[in-house]
Length: 88
Image 1: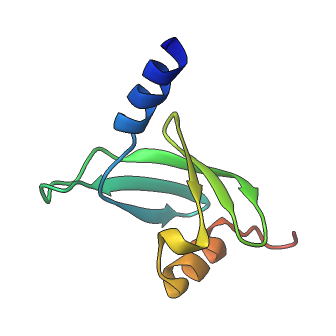
Image 2 (image 1 turned 45 degrees about the vertical axis):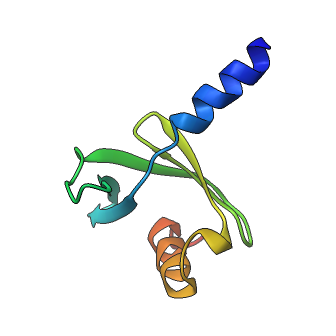
């Protein structure tokens, strides 16, 4: 019962809206465009997993996984270019 409750709370805590990423030099930051149309506060963004399809990132302290079907193809490629470091 406790596990079901924890999973339900995590499900309800998932972000809703659109994540807007900006790059300032080598730093990435993101803001949530909330369902109400408001922009959330600016948070640091860090990619820690870049696989052939799956992207893992932290927006502030929150962990997110971007699957190919979670955004349009052109946006997925643009995000991959943002997180790619030259020489890797």
